[in-house]
Amino acid sequence: MNILYITNHLNVGGITSYVLTLAKGLKQKGHNIYLASSGGELLLKFMEAGIIYIPIPIKTKSEVSPKILASMFKLSKAIKQNHIDIMHSHSRTTQVLGCLLKRNTGVAHISTCHGFFKPRLFRKMFPCWRDKVIAISEAVSDHLREDFGVSEENIRVIHNGIDVDRFKNPCLSGRQENLDIKIELRKNLGLGKGSVVGIIARLSDVKGHIYLIRAMKTVLEKMPEAQLLIVGEGKMEKQLVNLTKSLNIEKNVFFVPKISNTNEVLSIMDLFVMPSLKEGLGLALMEAMAAGVAVIGSEVGGIKTLIQNGFNGILVKPADTAGLSCAILDLLSDTAKRQLLSNNARIFIEQNFSQEKMVSETEEVYRECLGAEV
Image (cartoon, rainbow, N blue to C red; front, side):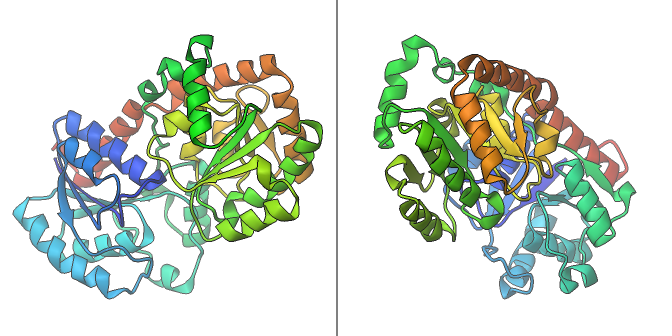
């Protein structure tokens, strides 16, 4: 197959990781992979994998941006020249673009819904879901049916896949021989010797950082050397920094805008927390579990698909600061329990959320759309 992926940008984030995993996996299976995007920090990784890049001016969040039309004209020509069989979009704006391209070229178009869309009138009037929609979790599938009326037969639930081999590096294992490496990593991030509670997520209200920071206030009253590492960028950064100052815990909270290698930062975490108010599935949470880090998550959306409470992690109610602080204190003070949960989490991801499973199931959807063995 000649497959075209369409995404807004290639900066560090869940969608870029998803597309890279799919593109590399399908390339290895013998398909020709093309990528249309505005570019970004991880472009080189795609090019190193032999993926053909087509630059388009699609870096916009507006569904009616003239950039969509400009991208359509450029891609229409590229689609014909490269005999594209199927297009796969990954955001609302690229979904609109894919819909226009489908009308213009007749090429099959599917999209992946990575989370939850606000059910705005324009989105209901012009849904643009087209041939098939991949939902990354059962919760997202329910959202598509209930809020947008997408028929169940047009939705396929395919969970995000993790390249579990990436997280089998012994420096993630916590063994004594790797202590020097971890000490150096902590030093580079400005961290001290205390336990590290971490989160990797964009700084958005839906991710629940506020509740985690407030919970840390209680944690620090009993474990004064504990530290909170917040990795991510977003519009709430100033508000969150001010919150740490108002709670007088700013010396124990560290903000890191972005990282190129999640393996390294996960290796120094004693505990990973995802206190989201909504979550499609949670790629960063999956990576933490694959890396053998004990996890806590809020009982919402796709997080409930990943965490089996008391077996491979701990679930707490969303926006429950007290419950969150109790769970953090419990795991930080019980090394054996933390180790048991982390071991179970790693095995669970390996068995249920492998890269190979995601690639194969997505390839099957492509074939269904094309109606033949391509």
